[in-house]
Length: 410
Image (cartoon, rainbow, N blue to C red; front, side):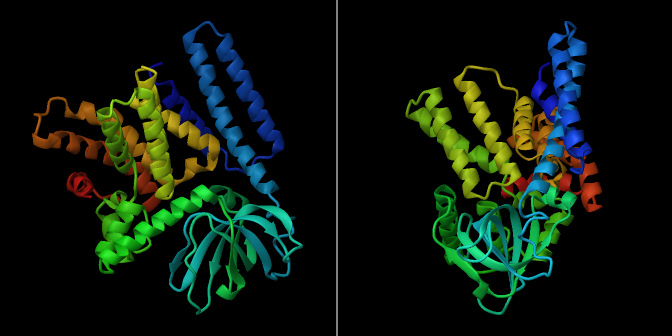
C-alpha cells in the first residue's frame, strides 16, 4: 500500500462518525475486542488482500471504540450530573480554572472557555474536571482575558446534553451576571501565557497602526487568526463568494514560516537534523501563537513529519502525511471527525494533493503557474461541494475563479 496511513485515517474517522458517543461500557469493550481480533487476523494472514481487509475492519472498529470511550469519559467528568457543580436549584457556583483561548467580547457580553479545576466556596472547593463556556454580562467594562489566564467566577450552570457536549468538548454552559463576580488570579501555564501575551502585543501593534474598520478586521484574521473584529456583512460576503477560508490561518502560513526558517538554516549550513528540530519547534510555537485551530495544527504536523522524513532520508508522500496528521488529531479527540472545520481542512488538502496534478495534464503551462492554481481551485471546490451543501446549504460556483485571485492576494 502506497498510502496506508491515509486509508487507516479515513476508516478510523468513519468509525468515529458512526458512533454518536452514546454507547455504553459494554459496547466500547466489544468494539475494542473486535479491533484487537481484526488486528490479530491481519498480522496472521499470509495474503495481502485479507490482511488489508482485516486491518481496515480494525481501524473502523477502533475509531468507533475511541468515540465510545470519549463519550464515557465525558459522562464520568465531575462537572456532569450527579456531580456537585451543577446546583439543582439553579444557584450560582464558584468555578476556578484556566481560560482556554482568548476571551471574546461581543454585544456587551464576554465569552470565556474555562478548563475548570475546582468548584465550590473559597477554601472549601473540591477538585473537579471539565470545560465550561461562561457568558459574562452586565454593564461594567469587561476585562481582557487571554489564553492561560487563571480565573475564578460565580456562575449559574446548565449541563450540556451528552451528544452536544462530546461534540463541542463542553461539560456545561454558564452565565455570570456581572464582572464583579469574576476574578483574575495569578499563575497559569507559562508557555500558553507567553504565547498569548505575544499575540496580544501583536494585536495592539496592529490596532495602533490601522484605523478601526473592515480592513483592520481582515488583517487581524489573516495575520493572527483573530476574527473578532470582522463584522457580519463582511463575513457573509466572504461566505457567499466561497472565499471565507482565506480568513482562517492554515497550511499557507505554516508553509511560509517553515520555508523561511529552512532556507535560512541551509544558508548557515545547518544539518538536516538541525533544520528539522529548529523548524519543528518553531512551527509548533507558531501554531500555539495563532490559537491552535485544526488547519494550523494539521499543517504543523505535516510539516514536522516532512522535515523528520528528510532528516531520516525517507521518501515522503504528502497524502500519507495528511493521514498521519488526521490520525493524531482523531486519536486525541475522536469527536473532531464531526467538526466542519476538520472536514473542510482535510478534504480540501486531500483534493488538491490528489487531483490538482492530474487536472493539469494536457493543459498548456501558463505564466506564474496559473494553470495549477485553476486546477487546485477546481479540485478543492469540487471535493468540498457535498460538505458545503450539507453544512451550509449553499454552493458558490464563482469560488473556482474568485479563489485564484483571493488566495495569492491574501
